[in-house]
Image 1 (cartoon, rainbow, N blue to C red):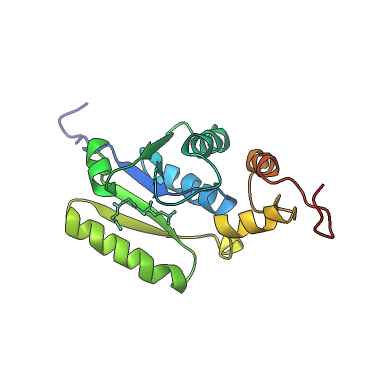
Image 2 (image 1 turned 90 degrees about the vertical axis):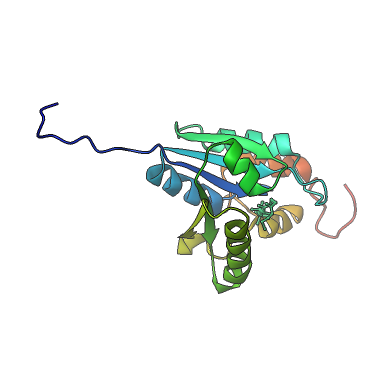
Length: 178
Ligand code: PNS
């Protein structure tokens, strides 16, 4: 490097995209892909919450996330059961990524971001607007459709569709057990 050239100091930017991911949807995947372009490393962190009763175990959710992000080398899948800011510090991550679908999400997200800021001023929350294509989409909606054996192929990756079929045995149309 010549004396006239200046080396741009580049801080390695690690972002955490936390959530329940029960299961991961195309909406989540869109946020993961876009985050992977903005940060050096993106850790998708599944909350291991003993209070909620999820459809998929933490390991199943992690496996599905790993499967659908296989082509993204700077994306890592992990889980945590601590305060998010504490987990962030343990991973040397500076940024929390969250997706916002609508104004309805905004209040909850603002409350979480403000709480996290209060807990640790050094951690920044970055919001990404969900692709309008998926603005109505949520894991709960996907589970509701899958429960009634409805089509979910436009909402979740194929691996998740198969996993959902494994969770719900299709009832017959008149509701009688198969
Ligand atoms: O996908 P979700 O369920 O909306 O994700 C919520 C999540 C996991 C981001 C949030 O519940 C969380 O960060 N929990 C960890 C506990 C914590 O740090 N709480 C304080 C911030 S509100």
